[in-house]
Length: 579
Image 1 (tube, rainbow, N blue to C red):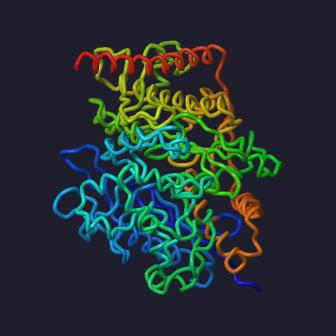
Image 2: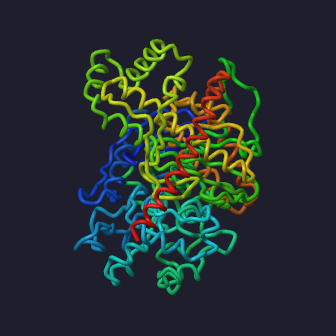
Image 3: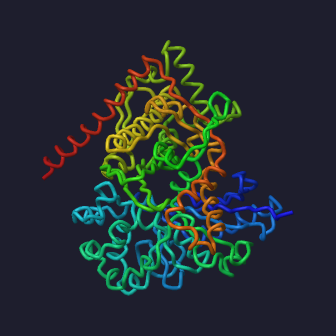
């Protein structure tokens, strides 16, 4: 009787690290989550920092907890894969963490060594980069975001002592984890192409670009600080697997295969888009092909939301990151749209409202969550006002949602939020209405991103959700109605990303020692077959808006687009007046 095979997926999100123990068929037999710390600066709202030491310790704790819960032996774990937020991790040449906090300790060894993806300190550096006109910009939608790694690295150079900067290594966080796990400094194409200005179609690193922005030392040292060794596609084995030290720390066996990691949103793509789906309780018998993947947008929704789609050719979309070649499947291209604040935005709009204490009180009394109370309140108001639907209930309230800038498709970090239709009301009714238009605004912005992608050459026909927002059926129906396409929900909203990471571990296990036989052009099909086998069926939410609601949503979308034009025009008028 053969020994059962398990794979571990590690997902490092914005607020926690999670490990999942997964069977070959995709069943998650155990999972464990450990919260992580994000340090903020009370005098600078742009600052978000974390620690690789804390993340690694939390990950080790989570893996051991999974093995214990499932009573699985380390020898039964055949591979491990990592995903993480696209955050900048800094270490010295020995792999020890280097402080990224401004002040006297900047560049010294110490725990706070991650500039989180949400950190916006590098605005001036991004402006400089975007003024270069470099071909690098063509592959990030025409404008490089200040959330990417090269603006943040340039900020560190400008603020760190030269000798300390020179001894530092700079990683996108998924690559730091595989480095820490194996001792091999191999970068993933997902990380370096999507966040670090590596262009696979132009030979990789672009010396002229780095010289032009003031990072000429990277050219002089042959990009050793960014990773000059071979760049790997998703799931390819890293080195000889887990190092002896990492094996002792995780409770696994030395040499356990480690798959090249991906950014968390791409793990969400891996864990969702190969799913079959249930329609009215019946499972579709169509097995999705690799070609079908280009019609399926993965929306990975948590604190922020990323929108990822694959295509056989490169599609250039202004304000949408990419196209990136080879970042998951060799020979295929990916585009990534994004909303910088979605789950965070919903929380902010609720918790800053004067009626929030009353909302919490009611949720406690009814033994339910605050979202259910708000939904009940909206339904009561809808009946009271004789409105056909919630869109009609809030037809005169309009919210533009870019409280943390716009990532896609405007690529404008200076965009802010606005609300029109305010009344002299601070009660629960008002909070419920604002909750509804917040969800509405997130859905309208999702349509804006999808529309821009399709207008430039994509053919997106459905949205595959993952992350916490997939639990919000009200929001999912809004997505389907607003974008006029089906939305497929994963079997477990919180499991898709960690499942995608586990798929990388399985691919590494099957590829370890067989890299030469697994020709590059066959890797994509091999990974796709793993995805199909391991992805549980999803549930389809189809568009269901009445003709009246469709008209209202179209009007709301037109107003949403006008709000962008108005804000930009007002900004220009004020800037001209202030000169």
